[in-house]
Amino acid sequence: MSVEKIYAVNAIRKLCGNTKYKEVARRKKFNGTYDFVFIAGDYLYVTNVDLRRKRTNTDVYFNEYSDSRSW
Image (cartoon, rainbow, N blue to C red; front, side, top):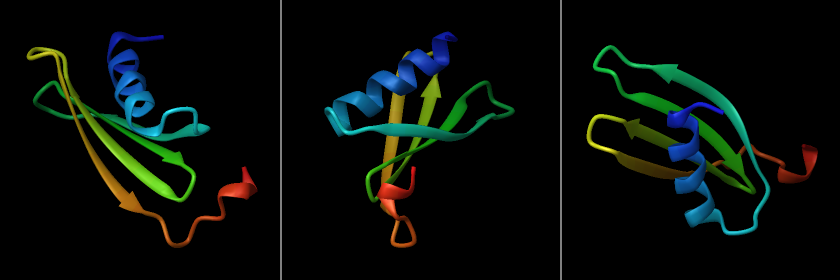
């Protein structure tokens, strides 16, 4: 597991607790930061990881189109 994914997963675990989550997307931005998108329950989590500053920023969105039991 890569360092940036470890940061992202730790941020998601702090927010979700024991809720099952799944990574659905990942991208590296031009400025060296990484974006991860996770689905957990009925929520969508977009986590931005900056390794230079050792920071994570997570935005939480309600996913009204999700059926959390489908996966």
